[in-house]
Image (cartoon, rainbow, N blue to C red; front, side):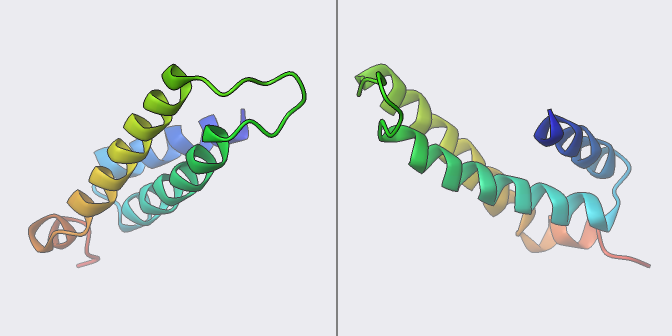
Length: 83
């Protein structure tokens, strides 16, 4: 629930071209990558290793990395700079 609130805040920050929105989105994407890597491996009792879970987590990692790369491009960074 807390993560969802932060994601909504980052969407608002991106939509309104706020510098903090860009930074928050990058941090949330980095957290998503770490959590997805952890989720690939079954660490909880009665949790199974499945190909579907692995594929979905890898897709999520790819999307998060693409978001971070896109927000790091110079022309996009210029949009979020404080003027």
